[in-house]
Image 1 (cartoon, one colour):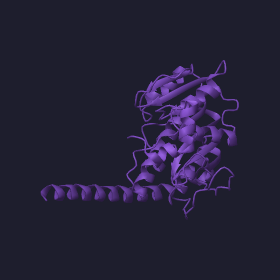
Image 2: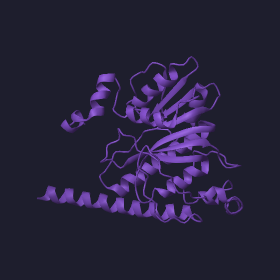
Image 3: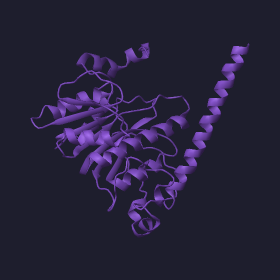
Image 4: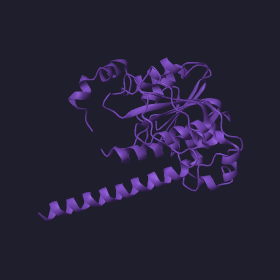
Length: 292
């Protein structure tokens, strides 16, 4: 899709062109690093959903410029080569992709995993929020395979009334979870970024890419059975986000920490039904216009 006149008037769009960045989104990662020192002590980084490559460019300059720095970019689409960046054209939901990432790091886990991916928006906020949440959970799932203890995970989220569930899931795996909206993110956009620091998975957790993290039957598995939820309350603890100077904090809604999996299953079912109804409506409208 071509750039509109609004894009060309945008200051970060012009700055990206002047400084050779592939997209204006490069400034989002740079501003997040200014606030959270994401690159401090990082020698191995992974960029998920990397295309067109602006975040990989930032990682390459900040980390790849170091003698021992390594950057791996993953995306389903092919991407133009970048100096200091190893590209993997693969699916982040596949175990083979996680193994290939570790192979490039010579068996060592990553210090930082970032994901600026987003689905094709429909304009229906509930549907877009649901699809983005599933993408984030897929990125988190592969991050549990490649991230070292104490590592950092940064991913895009869409602000919505049910975003608290994502926070509770992220806090299961990270000691510190904050939400930030960089200055370069448009005010009209519902996007924000979850900055998760201090990767610390629950005792006994076994990463499994064959099952979504918030699948409605996940709580019945051996890893997170009913006994585990009762004996280890930290697994299901929900904490309120503290205000952060970088950006706005997402709105919270009442949430039942005892049964988050049920809440997600009900919410997902409603969204799927709504999506099916909308799809059917568009189909019949198209047929009606054709008949006219």
